[in-house]
Length: 499
Image 1 (cartoon, rainbow, N blue to C red):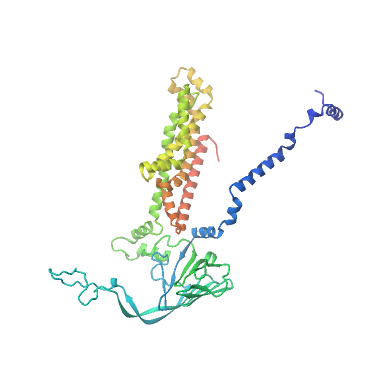
Image 2: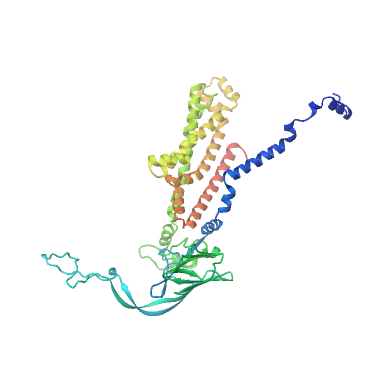
C-alpha cells in the first residue's frame, strides 16, 4: 500500500475539503461537555439553595456538637437567693461526683443567721386521736384555726457564698456577686447588673462572644472549647468543658470512683472487701458492666444483636435466593413465564428500601431484632437473587454440555457443570452483603428494629449525651472494619486471588 505524500494530501483536501474537515461535534465536543457540566452544577447550586444554606449555617453549633463527642461538661449553678446571698449547686448526675470542690471554682463563704421558711414536708406529722363520733375529718384543722402541717419559719445558722470566681481557662474567668457579674475573656471585660425586676442589664455594648436577645433577658457567654455560661437575674449557669470521657470505667456511685489504676489493682489483688457479699474483682467487673452513665453491657449486647441480625438475615436471603436464581436464569429454566415471574418478584423485594421494610416489619412484629432480620432478609433476597441469576446466565455452557454428554442426570449437570463456575461468585457476593448489612442493621435499628441502632438513636435524641454517641459510633466502626477485613480475606481465597 502506497503512502500519500504531503503534496498529494493537500491536493485531495483542496478538491474534497468537506470530507476531511472534522464535524462540528468533533471540533467542539470538549467545550460542549465542559459547558454542560458547568450548567448542571449551577442548576444544582440554585435548585438546592446551596449558597443560602452555607450562608445561614450555624457553624458554631456544629463545632460544639463535634466537641461534645470528645469531651464532657461540669455544670455548677451559682444561685442568687432572695435575701442577697448565694449558693452553689450541681446537677444530680453531674460527672464530678459527690462532695464537689473543684479547684477552678473559688468561693468566698461566711456563716450567717437568717430566718427561713420550712416547708410542711420537713415537719413531723403527729397523729391525733379522733372520736368515732367526730364530724371532722382526721386531717381537718383543729379548733385553734391553724393547720397542724402548715409551713412555718425558723431561724438557722448556715454557710453562704458571698463571691464566686469561675476559671474557664488560664485567661478567662467569671466573677459572681449577688448584685453583679464580671466576665473577662481574651482581654475584654463584660459587666452586668442582676436585678430581680429588671433582669440582666449589661453596663456596655456586648462583645462578640456574648449575646442577648432583648434587654433584661439572659446573656449567653461563649468561651470556645472551654465551654459556655448563662447569666440570668437569679442564677449563673456554668458549662465548663473538659477533654475526654468522664467516668468511662467507674461511675460516681462505684466504690472505685476517683481511685487511680494502682489503687484499684491493689484493692482487687489484696485489699479488704469493699462489699462483704462479693470479692473486689467481682465488684469491679459489675461496676464496669453496669456503669449507669455508659451502660457498657447493654451497649455490647445491642452491638451483638446487630451482628446477629446482619448474619441471620443475610444467611436466610442467600439460602432462599440460591434456588430461586436457577428459576430466574433463562439458560437454566426454559420457561419464560417462570423466568419473568421470579425476576419480577426479585424486583418487588429490592425496589422497596430496607429502611421501609424495617418500618413495615416493626409494625407487624413489634420492635426488636426479628423486624431487622426480616427487613434484611426481604431486601437481600431480591438483590442476591438478581445477581445470582445474572451470574448463571453468563456461565460457560461448554462445561455443562460436557457433563451432559456423558449421560449425567440434571442434578449432576447442575452440580458438576454449573456450581463450580458460580459458587465462588455466589459466596463472594454473600460475604460482601454480610459485611454491608452490618452497617445497614445499625440504620434500621433506629426505627425500632433493635440492635445498637436503637441505642444510638436514643442517645442522640437526648441532645446531650454526644460522648455516648461517639462511643457507640467507634464500636460500630471497629466492628465494620473487622468484618470488612474478614470478608475481603475470604472473598480473596474464594476467588483465587492474593492481596
